[in-house]
Amino acid sequence: MTSAPSRGEIWFVQLPTDPPEKGRRPVVVVSAEVRNRAPRATTVLVVPLSTTPARLDTHIEILPGETGLPERSTLRCENITTVPKTLLVGPRLALRRLGETRLRQVATAVQIALGYPPAR
Image (cartoon, rainbow, N blue to C red; front, side):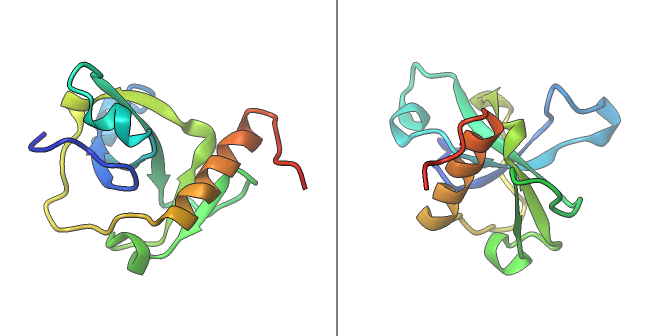
């Protein structure tokens, strides 16, 4: 890792829940900046991206123009996880950073995954 990750950035990591042959997958950093920048905080919260189409309320579909990735992606918010900062690998090409509106959608989908749908 060459720099500290920032909220909304896309990085690559081998998730411990994925089979080793799957390799690194893109993830979006969703943890607060205070955690991301803290030298003593060794982990960050991430939400993995998948190319499988969105099927659940906890899935958010995003287009290549929003991410910079070559394919349509799905944020799988029910799979939010903690990963060591040292395992994050930056992309070979510049990728986009997700905006605040999209990150709020992620937060809402995580709430749904926890069984706490937002009040209407």
